[in-house]
Image 1 (cartoon, helix red, strand yellow):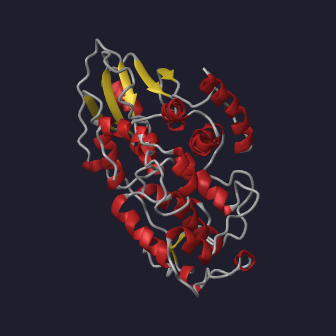
Image 2 (tube, rainbow, N blue to C red):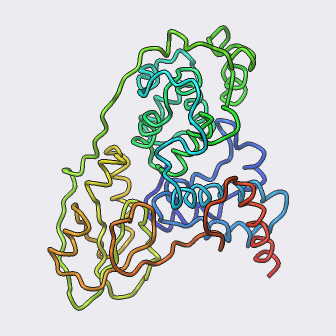
Image 3 (cartoon, rainbow, N blue to C red):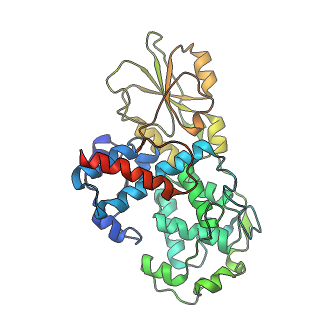
Length: 365
């Protein structure tokens, strides 16, 4: 489903079909690009993908939807850079009855057939269609009455394309703590987009009825799972050439093009403190390790940034900016953002309206 080698990843970018995407993206078999794991791990940038689409298709009503959805990723990252996204962002989530997660969700036993099928598939491959992610967030938060944080961490733990900004803020959007109202979907909606025919479930109600629904029996039992990243399974060993500066890679930056062909020590830094706060499962971790093999002479260090620098007497350290690099010291380089826009925008569409001007300038040149 997700090739590792960089040539195959680049080839996938060229197959993007914006027209088919806009028409079918909400359906289980929609023509989505399947690039999210590579964008999330920093193998390719949102900007590079956007430019590829614009160069091939131009900017018009056909391509706008795809580029807009791509822009959400940068927007969420900009919010993360400015705000604490681990708490309710705009207002308190309403109707919270627990800070756990419905047990039926993590056991794929919600009794909503299409949902349970997709959760089982999720555990097998580490990927889930975005529309189904919204359904599950709706069920956990707005039907099961769980606060969004624990269920969001559960999903992030298993995702190959885990991006904490996109994940946490999308869950908050569904739960109503980052939006004007809570997201609602009924059985009819799920049946339509995931080709099921189920009837008579606790979601087989009108939207008005769902807005006032008490937590159904199927979602009332909750659990508080502990997540741990298996860093002990990763071999950590570095040999530093002190005549060269050092590039620091991490879980969010595995860019094979970064200073390509130049003389650097190249270190993939896996900090236990970061993975304790934002744990990921073994499949997601190993996927990142495999992607790092696209970068020649990559070495892996499991430990804290200060330990890497102090133990190896690093002098010149270079890294890309990211909210999780708050303890890094050295030369910070900017990520390859889609737009020149910076700072916090309270709504995506205020951000998007300015972004479109940049897109049109690029497309016209």
